[in-house]
Length: 129
Image (tube, rainbow, N blue to C red; front, side, top):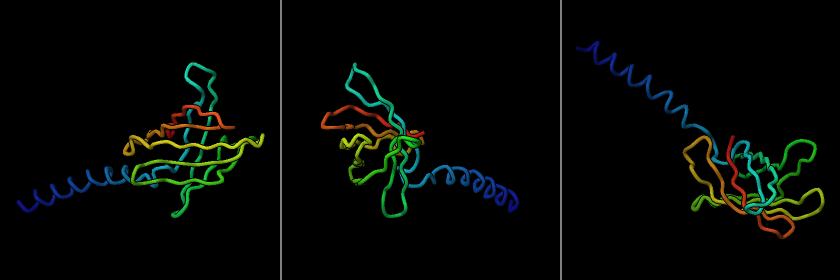
């Protein structure tokens, strides 16, 4: 009986380890996000966003590579899961984004919101890759 109980505990413990490991994804904004912004029915422009968390602040870059620009400011209202960041395009146009983090428990969570460039509002849904 004691052996059966020990085997049961070992089996239960071995099942909990993968579940615990999968839930440890880190800060909810960390990673690469991709989406297309534009007015509904109009031309869409690809946006790739990479966000990092240093334990205190969010940093990030838009379109990593040759045309990369860095966030000037970024924040998360964790109570309402609202994400905000801003930057300046290579052409000197202000860029802001404000969206709501959704499907937080999913690896492929999304941020749905408004991408504003040069004063024009565009819809943008970012999906984490």
